[in-house]
Amino acid sequence: MPKSFENGVSFYTEGTAKISIFFPENDVRCIWCPFCRSESELGRFWCRLTNHMVYNPNYAELPEFCPITLKKEE
Image (tube, rainbow, N blue to C red; front, top):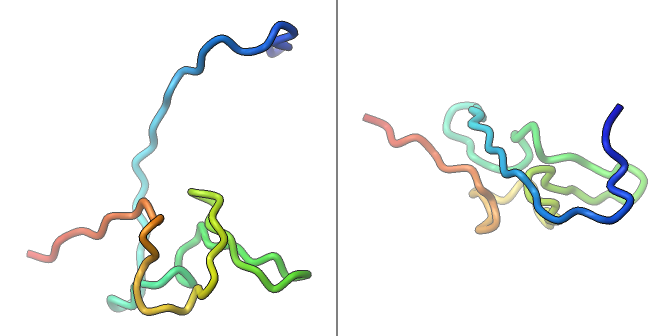
């Protein structure tokens, strides 16, 4: 049974995850990211990594709030 934190939370333990995102044929835009989700009833897109609204998921580059770093081609 998880704690209930009746007196509030005094600190958080930080965790990180390293994941790979694959974009088709160098077409790097939010619409291809699995973390870009649509609210179909409102027609909005949201980044599930940062909780930012994505105004244009078809824009031809990632927005500045995106935490994804692209692998350098060798």
